[in-house]
Length: 315
Image (tube, rainbow, N blue to C red):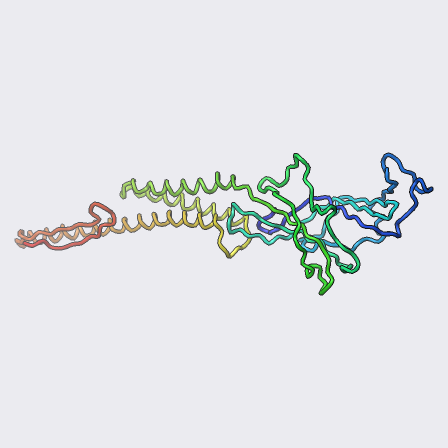
């Protein structure tokens, strides 16, 4: 699964079965081909190269990103005219994905097979035994990041065949669920710790400038790197993505600490300048004999958020 390109790569066996009375021949007990243990029903196998010499249904996968790659194939003819074509293919399907719940998202990717040459009046398509797919016990379905939950069928839209009317086709629906453990351990948990450690800077003295700056800037850049990593895995989505919202909020918390430290450092500078001004005024007052005038100055007293003021005390 390529989330950025919104494609699903599937390696599968496709078996297409149809009846063509022109392919009928006598069975072995009627003087026809001899049945062996390899062909108990008197069927005859042919290589893929011979497929062009018989009629085949004009079918194609309509939602492929690149042409279907047939790894190998063969077909068999049966005495009653049944034709069984089996091929193993590599298919890259386009899939419109929804990343709102990323990384807990579930994607539904269709594979549409439609008749590009034949109408519904010529052929009828359906799943053999009404079963779109089969999983054998012990099958490992999916990838390192995704689990293949089910493969089901859904209604086919005739317009997807390209015909204005009379289109025919079938549709498989792959249900995929992302494994979120990786993102929980290496994205969500570290980002949460970054925020907690950043808020620990409240217990660092304001005069310790290197410590204050290092703690907040390092974690801000770390979360920015996580956001960039997630964006590289996704297309240019304009809607909400839960993971990006979480990381953006974490980044905003760390940014608030940087703003808070900047404001308090600015107030410290004002306090130092005002203290110098008070000292100068007091010195000039003493020189002029105005020793009975007292000044009171308070800034950020007790808490950083306490406003400062500078007023002369009543003499």
